[in-house]
Image 1 (cartoon, one colour):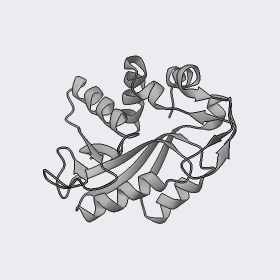
Image 2: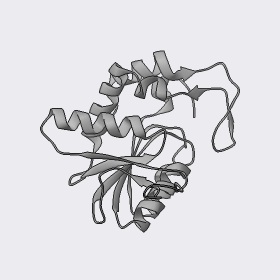
Image 3: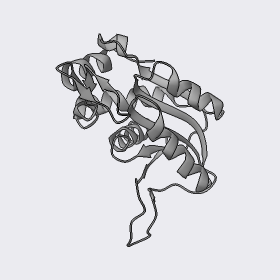
Length: 181
């Protein structure tokens, strides 16, 4: 699923091996992937958008996930799709509802009934993507798939989504980056 160019970009720009690092899950690791060093870079975003677009399930109308990690991936994927004449929308799920404006957590041009893919940059447990799935389901969107840039969960995230009947795709495995999960 991954491309050599994407793996190379992640290795050169986003991978840190000078740990220890405490991960979102609370686990401690000798390596860390600061994926935004790739997803916010022009060339990196192009590579990510292409890889995600190639991995999308049929019938997906929008892509997104928890803000901040999913945002640049969703926009890069939507732009890549548009360049090929395909209409694909991006969205974001806020961690908390705002107290002003529309006061919602869901941002972007999505509607009840849309078939969507949840994105995440790096997953250790699948918790962030699962939070997005739960909120999107409450909003009436159909979550068909979860796509993560790098899966360091040792299969945990895939099992979590399989139990929910949601397809799980990891674009890059830690071994492809030269590290162990």
